[in-house]
Structures are given as C-alpha cells and as structure tokens.
Image 1 (tube, rainbow, N blue to C red):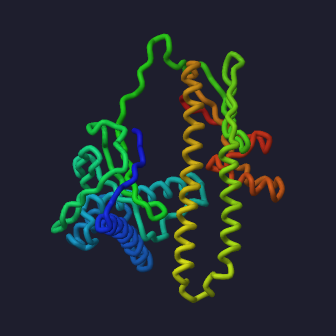
Image 2 (cartoon, rainbow, N blue to C red):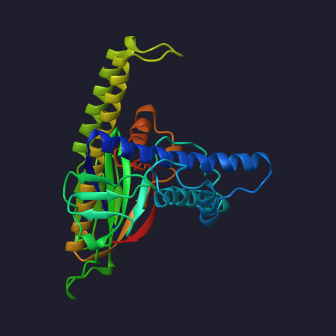
Length: 333
C-alpha cells in the first residue's frame, strides 16, 4: 500500500462543504466520547466495538451529522474503535503511559473506501448524505497511481488547506534472480541528529547522509518564530478578551508557517529514507538493523543537548550515536 497527499482546488462553496464534512466527522468523534463518558458515570460498560458503534449510528437516523453520509461516519467510528483497542493492548502489556481517547477535535479526517467515490482524472466525487447535491472537487495534480489501484480516499485539512490522501495497492517489486536482495546480507543503521542516517554495510561499504538542510530549516524557522512573537507580544489580547482582527490574522499566519515547516522537514526525511533504501537495494542488502533510541530521553545530557534531542528533525526523538547505547531491531529491507 502506498499513499500520496494531493491538494484540492475548490471554490468557496466547495470549500465550505468540505470543511462541513470534517466538522461533522468531529461531531461523530465527540458523540462517541460523550456517550462512553455518560455510560462510565453510570457504571455501565463502554461501547467500543465497531459493530456496536455502527448500531448506535443507525439508531441516530439519517441527517444527524449534516452532509456526512454513513460511510464517512463509519470511518470515524472505525478510527475510534481501533484507538481504544490499541490502547487496551498496550496497557495489558504493561505500558502505563497509554491513554484512552478522551480529547475532542473540531476537524476529523474522513475516509471513503473503494466503490464509494468516483475518480475521473483530476476530478473527484465525494459522497454526500441523502438529499444533498453531489460534491465534485478538483485535484491540483494527477494521481500517481492507476485508477484501478486506488483503494481509499481520505479528506484531511492542514493549516487551513484541504488535501486528500490517496491510498493505492501497488504490485511488489520483482527483481531478476541475480539482483534480488539477500536476507543474509545485513547492514546496520544508526539514527542521529547531525546525520539522520549512518549506514554500515557488508564488504566495508557505508553511507552517511548529512542533515544540514533539515537543521538549517529548523534553525531558520526558530529564528523567524522568535522574531514574530516579539513583534506581536504587545498586541496580544489580555486573558479573557477576544483578539483583534490583526491578532487573528497573525495566528492564521503562524499556523500556515508551522505547517509549511513540518511539510519541508517531512519531505526531507522521506528523501533521506529513500536514499538509504535505494543504496541497500543496489547492494542486494536484504536486512537492515536499525538502532532503537527509546529510553534516551531519560538520560541527563545538559540543557542544550536535551533540547536538541527532543526537537530533533528526525522525528521520534532520534538521538546521536554518541548520546547513549541503543537497542537494535531488525527490519527487512
């Protein structure tokens, strides 16, 4: 399965309808939380199974959640059920930090499965509830997969912009007999701060990827954020007062800049990971042993280094190899 995020080109009316679907999905999520909170207060068992939640949705009747149809509402219930059971499994295995879903969200992604949407070139038809006109939207670029390979479409919003995550089922790569990866050829991968990936392969070969571009993006973003905060500090509304129009525009601009920074870092991470995989495939490496950095944040390495580790661009708190010894886990290349 592969997923590509594609932006939407919508009119003002289509944009309002798309955000209406996301808000309705957030209402479905909030209703599931409120229902289980009410049952917990009265000593009743929670309703967390997907089928049981769907029965509660059917009892609510059509039109309860605006233009959101049954398929979109059930995708939210599926997400809620999966989150609950995943947390229960982690707590059963002894992870006391796992928490059940309790927080409400205004916007929730809506997923439509194969057969419920229509993809015609760069035009996409999203299903709407009974009695509502069809919702056609236009993609800002072609879908990188064949139409028959697409299995689901997910409507999401990020920093005020609308996107769809197109998930497709692609065939597994086939290699010639003499070029296929060998599981017995192992390479070690170390995750770091200065260098996101340092790979040591067989035959004395290695690969080191520089993270200067990611670090430069992070430092520039931090400097711009500090400058923007100093400029707007005197215009901030007092506690309990509604902000001015200028303050709301500043907050919107801040969210857009944060989203752009995350997209740039995420793209650089994907490009670095793809370089490692291509390097391993070219050398017929079938197994990658990756250092597991969990537990490093508990070590005291000083104020500056602790901050550097917690805000590392590599994602899940990936430390440098000189910070602390790390466990290893083996994954197929």
